[in-house]
Image 1: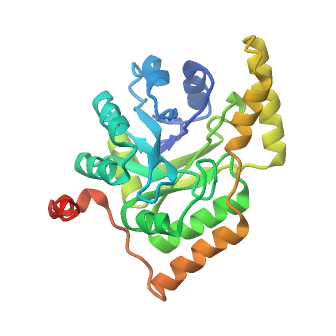
Image 2 (image 1 turned 180 degrees about the horizontal axis):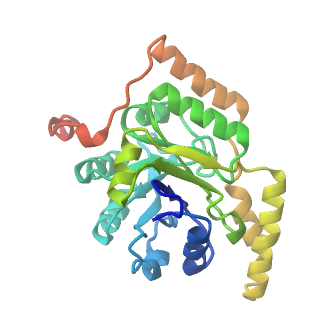
Amino acid sequence: MCDTPGLTRIAKESYNHPAEVYHRCKRLGMSIVTLTDHDSIDGAEALRKYPDFFLSEEVTVRMPTGTQIHLGVYGITEKDHAEISRRRNDFIALLMYLTERKIFFSLNHVFSSLTGRREIEDFDWFASYVPAFEVRNGQMWKDANRQAQQLAAKLGKAGVAGSDSHTLSGVARTFTEVPGARTVEEYFAGLRTGRGVIHGQDGGYVKLTMDIFNLLAAFERQACGCRACAANRFHSGNYRISLAERNAVLQAVDGKLGDKQKSPRLLWDVDSSFEASWAS
C-alpha cells in the first residue's frame, strides 16, 4: 500500500494522460488511486490493470428543481456506469440505483456555480440523501471550501477531498486519508463512518494562474490550437456561489435544525420501503 504503514490515501481527477496521473499519485504516496472524468470512464481503461486502482466518475445530474449538480460516484463497474448514465437526468431514479447498489457518492464542489444556480430545495435533497460532501476541492477558494465543511458538519455528512486538477502539477496535492485502512473495501468503510481525514491545498489566484499557464503549455505541445477554450474550461471550475448565497444556505440549515445536530442518513441502511414510498 502506502510507504507509511496503515495510511490509505486517494487523489482524483485530471485531464492529463491517465498513466502519468497514476504514477505521480504513487510517487506522492497515494496508496490507492481513482480518476473521475466527467460522465465517462474511458480515461481509466489503461489503469484498470493496477490492483490499487478503482473505477469512479464525476456525474452531471439533474435535480428535481431542474438545476444540475456534479456527484462523485466511487468504486463502480462498467455496468454501474451504463446505468448511472441512463439515470443521471433524474436524481431520484439515480438515487434509487446508488442506494440499491450501496455505491458511495459525494456532492462535489458544493458552493461552485460551475453547473449553474442552486435552489434552496436542492440543499434539502442533499441534506436528506447525499451521504458525503466534497469539503476541500483543490481548485476552489479557501472560503468556499471552509463553508462546505461547515455545512457538512451541520448536516452530519462524511467529508472527502480531491485535487480536481487539470494539470499534472496539482495532482495528489489534495486528498482524503482513512487511517488504518488496508484495502479499498476498508477505505470505503472508513469513509462511510466519517473517519476520512482531509489533507492538502485549497485553490487560489496564484495556483489558478500557474495551472492555466501549465495547461496552455500542454495544449501547445499537443498542437491543439484551442488556447481560449482551454483557459475558459479551466476558469469555469472556479466560479463561486456568492458569499451572500452561501451564508443564506447556512442560515437556512440553521433555521431548520435549530439546536439539533442532524444525524447522518446512510443510504446503504435505508430499508426496502424507501423506493416503494417514492413510487406511491
